[in-house]
Image (cartoon, rainbow, N blue to C red; front, side):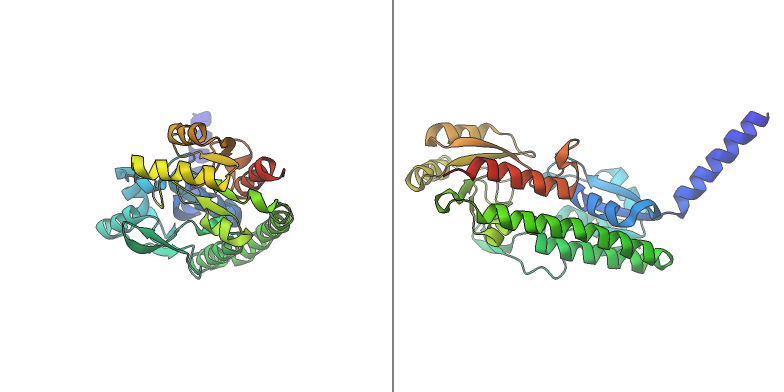
Length: 291
């Protein structure tokens, strides 16, 4: 009987401690990691689109709807990245505060189906990632002011890591030979990175992974790769690599490795946001750093 009482009290204290934590929903794995770095033990995160998964094609589940109703804070990317989440917030009528981590970003404009739309992949420029950290920190403090000191301390420690990566990126990308600054990836996810460091990313699928390029578009890209002597084609963790392999074979460009675009890796060095950025940086530098 005593053993049962001890077990019951342990389970009760565990459930109470979980209930005391700030309930936060994040839309995809990169935001979940950023939020975890800042929130630490004070928050309980439910993340929707997991590692190696494609947020462009995600379909919410009943469990996602339940999580929104339990949440006090919902953190999304914004810039049109998660229309499915906006619809779910409306349909559930959740009372949670919804914030866009990208608030304050000056968006790149892309053409999609003949219309100018904002490019949502702003986290690939670390200057924008600094804005993400600031917005997430402010949201956590507003939702849970009792733990403001810890949130701000974690935020500053996290920003130090990001500043270190900024310096590393500047040094490595500045050292790339002038002729090695054209790159092909599956979809147009790295425009902010290219804008920051003068690299031209080309993508057969455009902004969204949902769109399949036509045979004529693929042929035109292959011709462009040959004419402009593009050195490397990079696969993405969220995409089937067959199209990129075909493009590499037919154009003569080599496969430069895998880049992490819209999702963290399930394990390994790219399983955190700072790890993802450093992994991408080193993969690009190793493939393109030679004349």
